[in-house]
Length: 171
Ligand code: FEO
Image 1: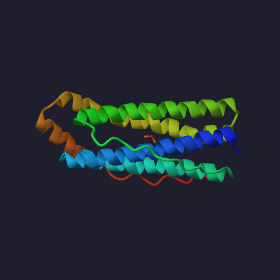
Image 2: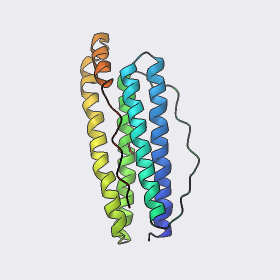
Image 3: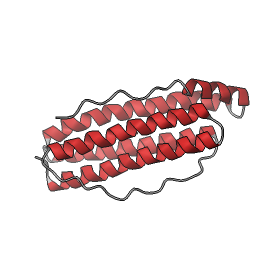
Image 4: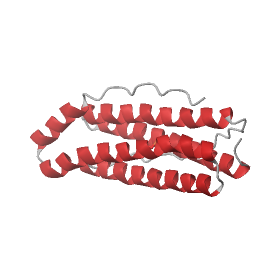
């Protein structure tokens, strides 16, 4: 059982995870449009990953006997600039999500909601990985700058990203 306040906060987070999926799908389409299939693939797999974050949280809310409330998703931008700018926006977004997860964890601690703390720990760990993955791509992007050959090499590497493994159901 979770509190009504926690139910509402988790539903808000479901919406943010949906927006993350939407954002990365929009970025994938943009990268495809500007001729970067590797960047497009990376963002497409990130979209898949965010979709898993959504359903994991959705399952938890339902499993707690609480109510899922699917809210309106904000429209993501259509333009994202250079490859470096795309990943800078990605890092900024992931840092925002990390802050949201931390706030949720703070609420779970305050409410002495041990089940939700355990559930959220997975997201805390996931956010460390997500930010690290983006930083690993930002570093070579900053190094190559405007060099087209360098960007093509990074694009080839990003083409290797495979779909995420299914996440184990929460219950
Ligand atoms: Fe689900 Fe990338 O945060």
